[in-house]
Length: 81
Ligand code: FES
Image 1 (spheres, rainbow, N blue to C red):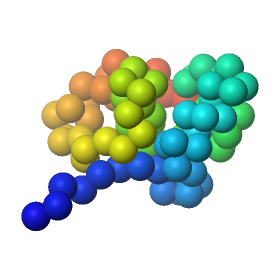
Image 2: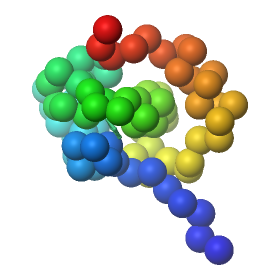
Image 3: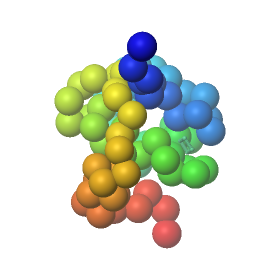
């Protein structure tokens, strides 16, 4: 059975590889990605994956389990108030 991978902000249909390239090219920090690129600004479920992408450089990530998700979202500041 093939493992599911997360490779995009589904709400904005932005691939992480395109996001990474655009963010690197423009020098945009992860905290400003929502404003600058539109990702993470709807449901926000992609933000832990985007943070992992920034930390690891990977643009296709395994589905994060509920405990990992809670830990990552606790460690992450919300993008918008
Ligand atoms: S999946 Fe990125 S804002 Fe919803």
